[in-house]
Amino acid sequence: MEEMEAKAQGRRRFLGGLAGSVGLAGVPGLAAAASEPVIRKPGRDAYDVIVIGAGFAGLAASRDLAKSGLSLLLLEARNRIGGRTFTSAYQGKKIELGGTWIHWSQPYVWNEITRYGLGIEESPGAAAETVSWISGGKLHNGKAGPVWEKIAKAMERFCNVDGQGGREVLPLAHDPLFRKEALARWDALSLQDRLDALHLNRETRDLLSPQLSINCHNELAQAGFADMLRWWSLGDFDMNRMFDKLGRYKIREGMGELAARMLADCGCDVALSEPVAAVTRHEDGSVVTTAKGATYRARAVVMAVPLNVLKNIRMTPEPSAGKQKMAADGHTGRGTKCYIHIKQKVGNWMGMAPHPSPITLTWTEQQRDDGTLLVCFGPPGLLDITDEEAVQTALRTLLPKAEVLGVTGYQWDVDPYSRGTWCWYRPGQLTGGLQELRRAEQGVFMAGSDQAEGWRGFVDGALESGITAARDVRAYLKGRA
Image (cartoon, rainbow, N blue to C red):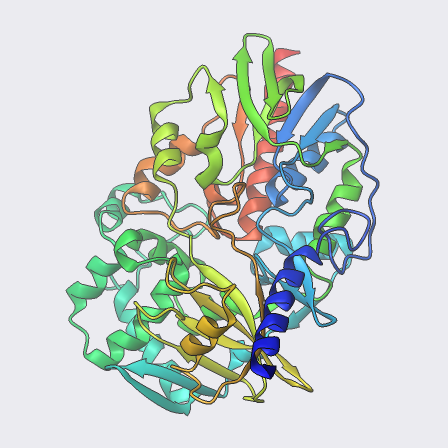
């Protein structure tokens, strides 16, 4: 009976991690945010610009365009802002259910941190002291240093396609198509293709595989190898540097606080819980129709929605064939992320397992008085993060004595306004689809983390894309004045 009640409490904690983060501070969904920007509802039916999507790309575009003196409406399908970031709390401590980590070498997000006076803090498990890993079907435990050296050497070999560590093929991290023809050869391969071609020994393969699986958040056969070369270039062609940029530092006040401060800076009209159904382009502008039947006119439109849901907005006339293909295929990021509260104190620990393990990577996110809070990632379809018993069973493959006290998370793959997590392209999409996806068509401009040139899939990429879209919209409207 006590065991059944403990499981029920765990379920309630999971659900509370979602419902409890709605409306905790002024703006719905901005848990732990101190700023409370005023939501100014639409007061007209025509604007200079309509921005669709209030993730960081939409927020950046809205702020920059509104500060240019243009009338602007920001439409968001959810009842909160922030897109695929979602600051919440677990038992009184802040957690990030979506996008989390940043770095000072990510220029756009660091500029925003400086602009709004925010700080950073570290995820302790990202600098793990001990590790557990599965290789050859067996569990191994050891010091992190020697294991990480093996992973670093394997990643160097994995990305060394040109005898120069990848520097010849992808020399400019923020211009991935600078040597498009040279990159196209490698863009035809999946991560699985590249891994198979190297004929690594079992231990090395089993250590490298989890790093690749968490990057693409899916099966390796679905994911393009060229995107790994892009991350490698962004990470300065060094495994330790790359990992520091991917998963070590986060905003102390939370992603929700950055979103709140950006929205407060916009001064534009905002409509939450207003999903867009259609955009119809005309010679003199566009008409945006919401799912509730409201219509708004604008001289220009910024589409700042995730790639995996782009096809759900009807465009008239239809967008280019290239955009339609990218939208139809989508990106691979559709795995799981959750936080697992365990009774044991494991210190700064990391666990890893190769596909098809339900947990790919997990590490210490908070050392607590009542145990440890782990952050956990896995590929799609292998772990029900709402089932505490299933989570404990999966975790015990890496921590055999783990006692799970609670689980919380967010199911991004079933959210109709994201249909996935961070963006990782499929084979051929980087060289064959990125340019067309980014191209504006008749006053409709594309924005979003999923089409950034630099840190695509990150908040930094979303900001880059939104700022770029705002610049292009201003030029377009000036030319039509």
